[in-house]
Every structure is written in C-alpha cells, then in structure tokens.
Image (cartoon, rainbow, N blue to C red):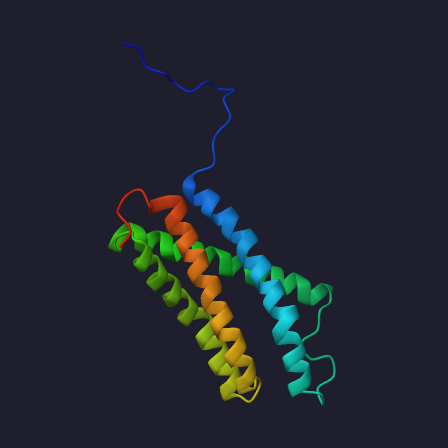
Length: 154
C-alpha cells in the first residue's frame, strides 16, 4: 500500500470557507453598490436637500465603504459558517442565520438612523428588504459552498 503525499510544488486549493469568502466578497460588494446607487443615494438626497453633499461618493467615502464591506463580508461569511457547523446545516437554517446577521447589522443601523431622524421611513422600506436578501443569499452561499453535503435540504 502506498501513501500519496503532497509535493512541495503542488498548488494548494482554496478551502470551501475561503471560496465562500471570495464569492461573498463579490456578491455583497455588487449588492451594496447597486442598492446605494439605485436607491439609497437618490432617496437620501431627496429626503435631505438642505444637507450639502448628503450621501456622497468620493475617495475617502469609497475607502471607508471598502472597510465597511470587508467587515460585513467577514461577518456574513463567518457567523453563518460557525452556526452551520455548531447548530446544523440546512437551507432553512442558512436562511435563519442570514436573517440573524441582517438583524444584527442592518436593522440596528437603519432603525438607529430612523430614530435620530437621519433616514426617512421610505429608505428603510427599500433598504431593509434588499439588505435582507443580500444577507440571506450570502448565508446560503456559505451553506452551499461549505456544508450542503453534510445534511439534506430541509
């Protein structure tokens, strides 16, 4: 009997978690950019015409947004991954874990902004459902790429 060992020059494949992180990086950034430019930016500018440069897009804002998205991708990937491993892996649980991340990030953010009169209800009515879809898709991608073969879809 022989044992196959990896050679020093063999390329390393990306782990399922690493792949889920990269796929979510693409998905979440595309979703965030679409939501911001298609809905949030125009709605905030309409709601707050008296505030100069509300909802801007400049290099400093872009850099901060990049940091925000990196933190969001890490949370949207790692929290569902850990929950899938600890509490069980299924499609419905992935939806539940994505919903939990959505509540912890976006509901708190937008309700806080609304509470301080910094976001109108119309923005919440558009931004929150789109953000929920974004987080559920991200969590489902984690399940699909890392855990779906461990349990049947339920």
